[in-house]
Length: 143
Image (cartoon, rainbow, N blue to C red; front, side):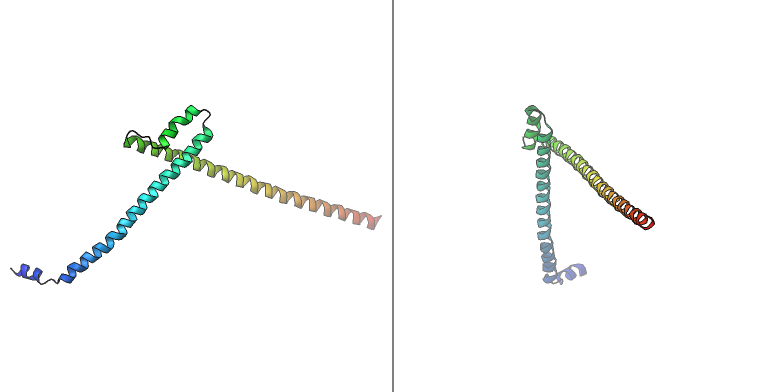
């Protein structure tokens, strides 16, 4: 009996406070879930668009484009097939992105090497001109 009477003495404000805290936590949780879903949909659209562009750039015939276009436009027969296709598109996109990163890095390295070569060439030309000037001065002085 002592335990029941102790529960009856718990003020309603503490249960209301707990309820308010739960309510306050639910709203951000729901917003975060909505944001995550929106981000997920956005990524899928991005991957699809990039994959579609890649397919169009790399396909040599219209028949090669027909299958990926139907996949990208959402003509899926089963959710599992859709997930597999999304994963495949994601892998291809990541592969393409990696390839582009490597290519960009190679271009940056080549550009850096060209700048360095130009600097070395310019220094060599300046040194050559200085040596020519020194030789002329010595010839005039000794001549």
